[in-house]
Amino acid sequence: MANCITRQIPNAFTCCNALSGCIACVMAFKGNYSLAITFIIIGAVFDFFDGMLARLFHVSGPMGKELDSLADDITFGMAPSVIVFSLFHEVHYPAFLQPISDYIPYTAFLIAVFSVLRLAKFNIDPRQSTSFIGLPTPANALFWGSLVVGAHPFLISDAFNAIYLLVMVIVMSVLLVSEVPMFSLKFKSLAWNQNKVSYIFLLVCLPLLIIFRISGFAAIIVWYIILSLLTKKKA
Image: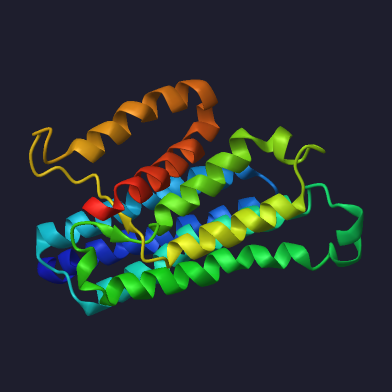
């Protein structure tokens, strides 16, 4: 009986991840972006521990892997899509886009679609055991959540408009399924030579958080992408 319960603990954490993602979606539909990103982060915590517990209890299997991907697409795919969908209803639209302004917000769900593709690709790609190919879905979700929370006044001002947001959606969606190598922050040792890229990345993160505060997390994701592009030949 105890063994049966133990086997279900990692899946229970995965389901909590999915539940957190569902709540994040509801908060985003209501325009409560702060709570939306809070539940995305809570989902990320559950996502971290479900894998750790599966390894601890030696209960990893195909069902857990599939369940994890489904939960991840809710929390890291659908939730950021809804955040952007709601933001599209607040941003400024140039005059020539006004006739189709009711339809443009639905392009936000490209994030969810490409997240599904990203997760399916990750599950069958043996190259991604120690690093990533393409932008990880949690990083993408953190980018959108922190950007909208931290830079909301700017995003709904006349200095920003729906065209910029649409371009950002397309770029981030493509990065999810791109063949760009993205480094991992897993440290096998503390040696500088083996972790040079990770150390450089972390050294820049603190100033970004100090300067940009909450939206600094979005700046960190951009920095992560740039550094991955600059070092991809060495990956």
